[in-house]
Image (cartoon, rainbow, N blue to C red; front, side, top):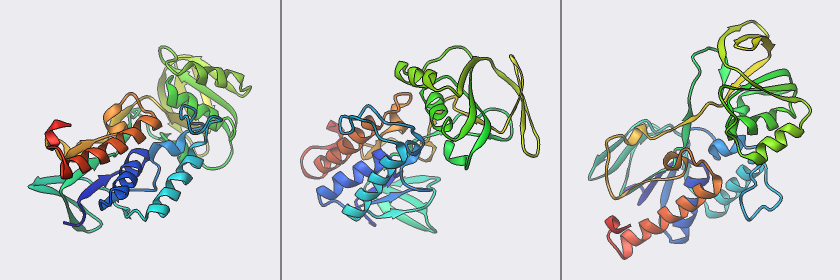
Length: 273
């Protein structure tokens, strides 16, 4: 085997699993298709962690994850895991070769629900520089969090929600205090992509904007283990907890998964967890 534990995803859940395993002297390999951090890098402010009473920006939190990777010498392979094969142990293809593990932790997060239009972006990291007009579609936590982030990088931000605002009341209060954020009820009916603008057709009228950023829901990214049921498979973090996507829950999931793996190896059968 290449390591006892394979971990798919280098967000808060995956990194906390790897760190706790290292404290048990258990080797692991983390697979991440892009940079570490996952969706948390998009967060305007993480406030529900007792360790950061003043809150912490998503990018600053990602920097802390990078520091943990360095401190514990975690092995991270930047590759997209498309499929896992269970044949006794877990086997995955990544980085041009096959890896084998006794335990597999899936901390692969979620992927966005898509609008049926071209030219829509789904993460704030896809938008560089300053913009004049930004339209954000959605009425949940992520949509309003995106609005706060983009309000610092755009002259005007409009949040378009279809039925009702479902976001945390604290987020709604923050948004309403920003003079350049407008919240409107409506629905997109079409997008015409021009060279430097987007003409958005909605139930409330036609708008010309620089970017359309959608946050209309997330789907667990677990297709790579579809059909696999095994007591040595752990699905954690946002991949398991949707729609309860919280950084603190993901970290707790990762620590618990590592503790369960150690118990499986040293104390109790895995099926008792």
